[in-house]
Amino acid sequence: MRISVIGTGYLGATHAAGMAELGFEVLGVDNNPAKAAALSAGRVPFHEPGLPELLAGHVESGRLRFGTSLVAAARFADVHFLCVGTPPGTNGAADLSQLYGAIEGLVPHLTRNCLIVGKSTVPVGTAEALTARIAELTPAGISVDLAWNPEFLREGHAVHDTLSPNRLVFGVTTPDAEWALRQVYSTPIAGGSPVVITNLPTAELIKVSANAFLATKISFINAMAELCELTGADVTLLADALGHDDRIGRKFLGAGLGYGGGCLPKDVRALIARAGELGAAETVDFLRDIDTINLRRRERVVRETLDLLHASGSHRVGILGIAFKPLSDDVRDSPALDVAVRLQAAGVQVTAFDPAATVPARAVAPQLIYAATAAAALHEADVVLHLTEWSEFRDLDPVFLRTVARGRTLIDARNALDPEPWLAAGWDFRALGRLVESRNPVARAESRESLNAPAPESLRPGSLRGSRRGVEAPATLADSALTRLRARVRRSA
Image: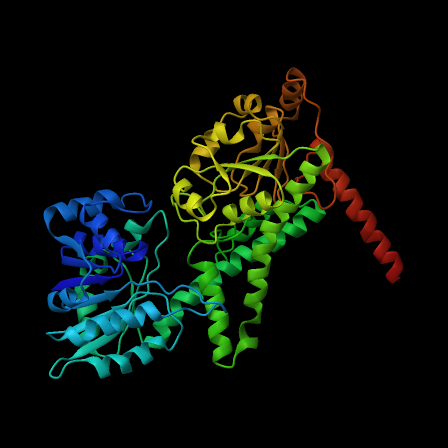
């Protein structure tokens, strides 16, 4: 059995290398000659841990090769995976032109019975329409099945997710199609990956509904974070408590700047658009609120940063992280990049550092200043923003960075840094919905005195800062809450 992978972007290149690792001869096809040439030379044009070594090894062995000819793919493979892009159109609906282009360039040239497998994320009903188009184009005497096998890759972990998927979804219409997919994935199935057999519409809906649900969890905890900011509660402890409920779980309950990237925002909006086309717009109205809450988090950080700069008469911001998530150079709908661009448009001088995303970010937002190191990004900064939770940012030295930056305010918009060393070094550490208190008030006070830094102000209602009122804060909050409760009881009586 030989395999072709049509479309060699992030999904396609990873899938092609993964199929080669599983033992198949693989031909990757892309309509971009430069991309095909780079992959043929064993070079991956994006950041994904573990993929360059995997791809280069199989290119060198000859098991994996790349080209630009769909005719060659039609004559080569028994199974064809469609991994082309389905970007959002002007109304949020998926643009399927690349998908139809691949079908129309491949099917008329088929020379043997085969299986075509869609992996691209598409609106429900797409596979049914493609089936009809394939039937029109298939040469006489050739039998073609269409299946749908949605991907569930996590950027930064895509190699693992390809070789050891946490589930395999096979949307099929014939036993032959199911048999072929079980052969392709025999190794991960033998390793324990569960298989869900379903029809085509269900397979199409599984991917977008999974992403919509994950987006819902993220926006839910960020809505709770706003309430925490207003009441003095701690969203990280709230999320921990929720996570102990096995009906909820702790994953995707990290409050912060919100979701981004090439999947969740696109899939949520595409699902909204498709529901409207089906006459069921009201059914997914809640997803519009999910999207709105997500965008509010970016606005919150921009507004707070501008307020800080205006109050001090300063104008320089240093940004840590520009990719939408760590272990990736993806800046598609990146909350971090969005915040940086908005601040720059408001007249702020923005200098950013990211361990992997500088090149793609510069292509999208050349108006920003990009630094080669974290320290360079923070040089003379009046406010520091932590916007992507790369692990190396947790190892930064706050004492040294205080000598680099001009200001002493850090906004941890990802709730990923340990506030203790920053507070001890004299930084005004702020977070989204999080109580920020020193775990050792005495040592913290001594550190501030030795650094000649003033103690931070008390928590103001609506501030991004968590409470830093010290050990008396819980009693103060409790007294205030009790007073309000007594007042309500008296009024109701």
